[in-house]
Image 1 (tube, one colour):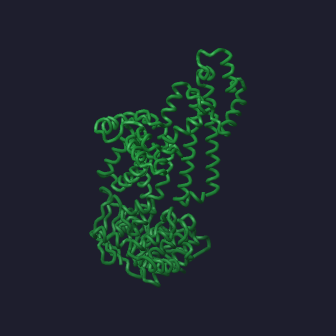
Image 2: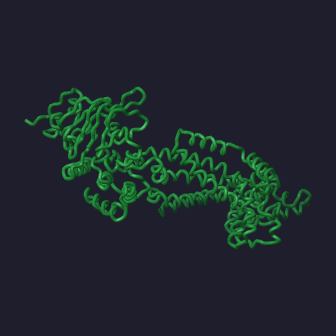
Image 3: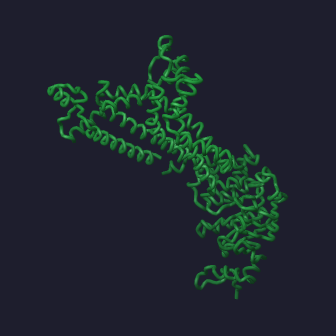
Length: 262
Length: 338
């Protein structure tokens, strides 16, 4: 669903993200991990052509559309309907003056879905992320962070997106709500074959959802591979540092990625 | 929303109370004896004493303040020293014309300023933005009396497109007399179907309203641009772009509504400012509004009239702000829940 080759994002002379190769297939979750400033969010936004004030080169394909050479109208068309964004701070990502249902209706109308079809798609999508349909009548400040984040995922579903681009989707949520949101994403990946590109700095969380992992540092990819392999046998020193930094409860074993069970 | 409005109403009452005390102090601080101003410089001591007794000038200050407040609440705003009429009646007659002029100016300013602000934000850093910013800066900085004289000389005296001065053609009073209800000529003419006077009033309104509109249009355009640029850099705008909306749609269909809050507060501010700013314009175009009355009052040290004008402008400011609070509550659900 996503194919990235030789991606380079530059601001002036400075290379802020460089990804030689990254693919996300249907029904697969690929996580990009790294500290802040490692270029992971830039890579994710570049997938939708949403990086502002920077020069982007290489090849990015979402389905059959080449993002970097597509006509502006084609680019607008795939945003939302092919690949949808789920952002870090869920409430700030929703327009404060708009009911959630209004946003959903406008987004659907933007992609040509109106009337009864729009209503049934909205209800179905909201139910798929286990939200009460009444939430569509609420404003962003009237819902919790977890509800707002699940609504963002519902937007993607209603629009028929095949790819979800999740930018630190859980870092603004508390731990139990994090687990709920990840569970929703995992279920949609497994049941509907959605491709998920998941950006996070939280390795413990990543280990619960990612099939493959890409580790980035200072704009470059330092390691990539199957999640279990990267977590149990990290080849790069930076990856080992990241894994060692995952907090662990005293006397509690087996939760920490990178530690083989004994 | 109710709690929010009650609090705003309380604040408004406090502001008006402060202005009442201030006008009272001003009346006592203004040099010159009000009794002399009223009775005339050649009045006998007996006449002066009578004037003093009439205005309660022999009482202690707290007693004078109390009777001032009591009179104001009872609708007695004092007697003008130069017209010898109740200040309230004078204000009722002069103010509607000012309201008509400034109201028309604000409509022009909003209709022009907000779209210009949107266009500037849409083409940020490009030629349209640059030209809108330069023209709004000019509109804000050009002295209002200069603009009034320039437009009057060019479009009225020179080209003859618009009348030079006045509120409407006085000859029309003979052919189609106006029935007065609100004292706002355009409104009275509209509702009584007096088309000759309505047409004449609108033609007379154009130039002075444009002059007064210049400053608010400029600041509204700049504020709209700034608020839209800020709003369109927020997280929600990124999500809206990611949903497939183009830049114009993000600005007009999504960012505009939350961006209107600061613009509305600004409109309330410039409304009261424009009433006073309009005094000079009224003088140039001989508009029968508050400006001429205020100028005459200041010239003749007419303290009750000056206090009346001051209090009226303060009340207008407070009412405009309350109206904006209400509108903000309607357009922004976050305000409602405060």
